[in-house]
Length: 149
Picture 1 (cartoon, one colour):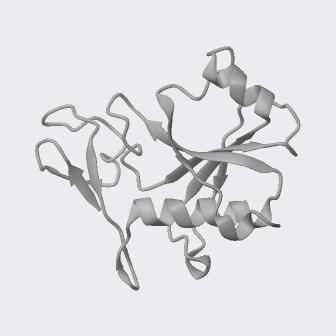
Picture 2 (tube, helix red, strand yellow; picture 1 turned 90 degrees about the horizontal axis):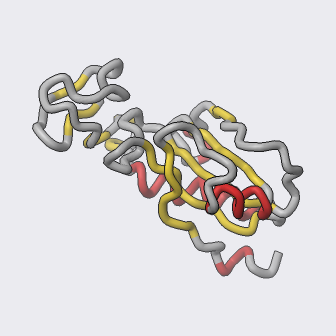
Picture 3 (cartoon, helix red, strand yellow; picture 1 turned 135 degrees about the horizontal axis):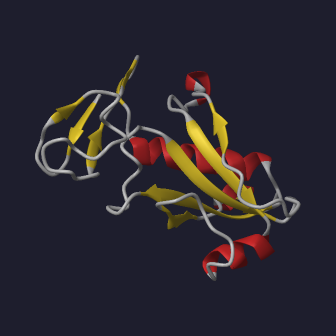
């Protein structure tokens, strides 16, 4: 299902979330096969972020979460998002795990952390911690088609 991006070693599913046994890198080239071919993780992540903007009017921002020293996706073909929502009560950082939804265009599992705007500021100032090794990646812009909702 994947290989080490640094040395090219093919990795078993169990090895994908661990440092490469040959070079110790966490960088991965991840691909998964579905009925349509190879899964584009970036595109699927963007699709999921867009879907969430469309159904959750309180969302202020959505960020991709990166994992590990190399800042990759964790090597396990999983979507990770940090969602900042005005409708979320302050309850700390609680990763919620979701199964794939291939019929909705999301053929990979996902982990969502939803926080309030105040909690997001606490994460940015390091007063509130993400899971070990997780960092905030790029933001997904709110699609203009949902601006007026």
